[in-house]
Length: 95
Image (cartoon, rainbow, N blue to C red; front, side, top):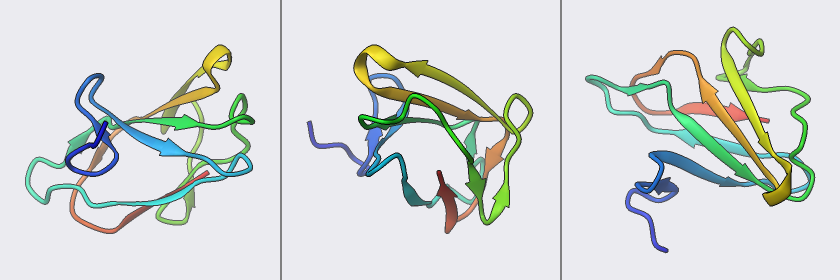
């Protein structure tokens, strides 16, 4: 399925990410006005059952405070929901 905007799945209102060797690095361009409230990212990959570290704009985020994680090991997915709002372009998410 081709997503518009690229990476956004309207099926579950999630952003889809393919991890390489349990690592992903992406830039999120959020709308300037309302922004993205509690965006959810689905990370796909063979080794995504655990998350060693998550950073937003270079700052390390704390689990169960800054973000929430759900693991779907049967389908090799890691669901990450940020606890907050992203506004404006150029936010870098690294895991």
